Length: 371
Image 1 (tube, rainbow, N blue to C red):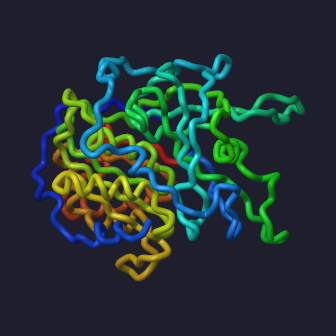
Image 2: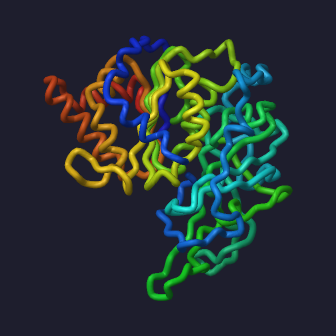
Image 3: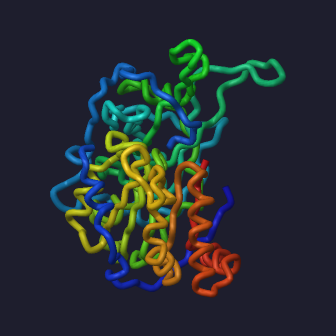
């Protein structure tokens, strides 16, 4: 991932920039990434966690803004504090399934205790080294490699004390159509280790890493977030910093717009938290869902994230042109459609697309972490 320098002092846009259909907000109220390949889940399999969707709002949100240890605001950006040869040992505090029975896979909300010894900034990632070994291409038995996971909490964690971090992990499995069963030999080593972990389980971790997805320095900067699946992880850290925590030295005054793509309503992640934030800050926070198995796009096909963003192409372009930062996390398949949409808007306006996009990157407004 190429690093980008983020812009500062971007202008504030008027709240009227969010004019348009409220269909996305209505769809979002329906009953409620790890960087791994697409997975298929065996029908009715609960992997020991059951099929009930656990919610997080009650456990990880206060009635008002939550007080936090503000000394972490003065912390320099931590980078690669712990490396492969000398990892940090964290401890699993809890693992909960956060999707419903009709979701297309199992996604877990995993809180890991680090005791304040592995701090990070919002938008960074941890590396996880799963236990065990593998045989490499040279026939040598070696430890498993590091898997990167975007951190799904702010630096203060879900308990607001700066001593935990949250991962949002989708269990990677492989469904063998010939055997009509899951093939355990092809399951994701690290994701299954994390999703199967019990409280007290030790986890070897590296990092934190990453500068691409850091938030703007100016809290008045509008932020557009585009996520698919577990790509919601860094976006959760953003909206919790914006709307959940009491950080007066970094009080968000901009507009936050989340586009979230999943298969169906049962696959929504953190929707209870998101809707609570929308209710508390209706003029600042908007969410639009793309539910590929429940909604149709303008052409009658399945509604994917790029289709949903295209519905608001003029508003998105206006925000970017006014200094907004745009963040992408999730499947890389969303990018061609979004780029083509922005190119079309540029042509309509007589703007050189290549120069315009390069300008966004040079000013640090364009943040991409896809897989």
